[in-house]
Image (spheres, helix red, strand yellow):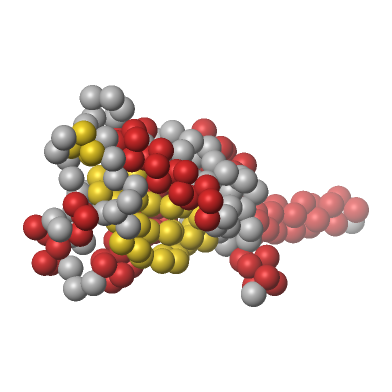
Length: 212
């Protein structure tokens, strides 16, 4: 009788375990309850692009592309949300070398500005430019902060693109890299482990509600 009882207990544990594991895995989805607050700025070269006529308003444009970026990052395995907090025209950060934008100096100028704004640590400040960037000094992929998301330091990305809804991949690439991934197009196991550590430092949904 004891043997039958023991077998019944084993069967119960065996069939219960997968369900429990699934619930745990569902609760622990990477990036769940994390909202990236996007503070968006753009310059005159972005605003005056020939693609500008395809955009109704800049606000609607950025809402559209960040919605697409969010969906694609979900497919990569990080279930973050992205909230566009503001969209602002500001041409004062651009540093020109003749007819080219000096990417390094423009990035540094924008970074200094972002550091004074005291945005929440789950924020990314973006500066969208449409003019040609002098890439000989620094690749455009590097025009961002590194491992600053959800720390006490500003997280910033300079995005070289044009205002058309189909052109969101550069902004997506810079978002993924600014979050802390080593790979812009996919997340490997090392990326996910690193992002999990980073996201643990971010305010969760319940914390935000308590502050409001």
